[in-house]
Image 1 (cartoon, rainbow, N blue to C red):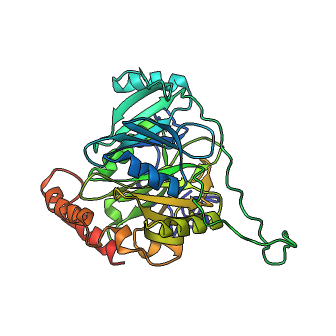
Image 2: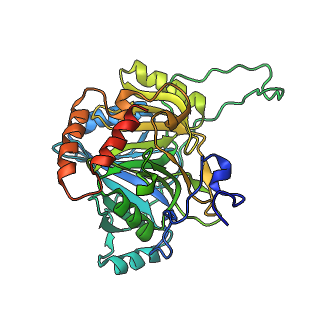
Image 3: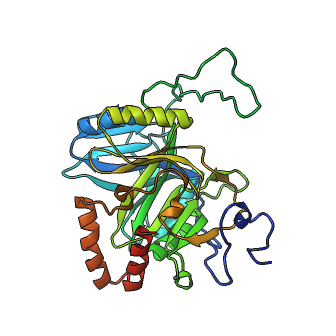
Length: 379
């Protein structure tokens, strides 16, 4: 039975259309392992004091700090969300994924010709270090020390429609940092999008929730995918990793869960008052449904507060729809030039120069793809 008529498919939920015959299935037939979650992200930055100051305003807590390393955590128990090491310049270093069990590390190491090594004692556990086809660092980890849970920011009690749940009480959300609960996802751009996508699906057992394609180029295949962990019948975030085709390999943004809309909005006011730059928000996405708010940290990295995201089990098939700027949100302000990477800046100039280089190199970014990308920016 076709994807457009199969009861319970992602198409029935919100995607404009399901897969056509012969299109990418969105999962590997026999993956090496199936990771359970995204564990943490790693960065290098020259100024750890400045990074920590922003992190606290954004809602992180410091898990550990030395002269050369900063570990940031959310309120939920587990590993740190972000590890920042001192380096000569700011750069994204890679992502660590949580293995489902210790044996998966041995299985992955054997399949990739690598080895299992120990993580630093401050984190504990073991790791298999890999590199995706586009050069992105990928770590698969297991057995780390679990940081104890911290007090979370309570969600507000709402009176909705005719349902009265709050009487003789007021709403006064504090204008304070929106406490980060956990790491949600990372978005990466790749010049070898399809090759890298297949690598993640095969090696880590990830599965696609939504495919996006350049308008008028569907027959050439997808150019973006929102990818979740396969936990079987246990629901997982709509996307833990998102990947998009572009003229250079780079970090796009990462997202961190907060308790509710009021925490997100009041936390945004706190960031604004501290002089930080809002890139785009507040709004609600389509793919994933998250309420979002995007900020630039002092090193130029894009980071997102989110709340109320979708959770899918492994029975849903991928949705398919064209990639447009207007299709990034159900409501909210139009996607900003900063978010789209077209505002005048050093970063946008790097992207522009990389377009020329990418067209000369052996990758998936050709002239037709460039035209499709430029169409997205004006859509």
